[in-house]
Amino acid sequence: MRRETIPELQSLPEAEQIKVRMAVTPGSLKDPRVWSAYFAQIAGFIVLFFVFFPTAQPRMALILAYVIPTMIVVRSIHRRVIRERVIAFLENNSAI
Image (cartoon, rainbow, N blue to C red; front, side, top):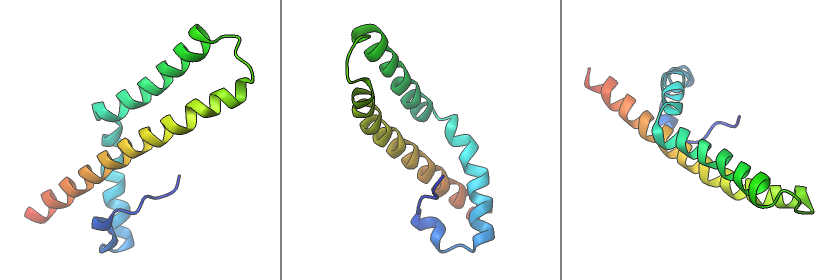
């Protein structure tokens, strides 16, 4: 997975960046915005392609037309949550 550029992390040394990412990333998946976005993407896919259009052709083109835009939306939500968590983590550690 490509590392996202978060301006708040750019000023830190590489070892500190890794430490912050290791502390923040697992918690971001527990955020309701992230897992609900992933769930909505999967549920929408199942409903659309197995309930409404089970015999649609060309299948691969339709799947890509659904997956690519929803993937962009889900990734943007996940990035936003990770950035918020990084900012909160850095603020909490700087206050100590």
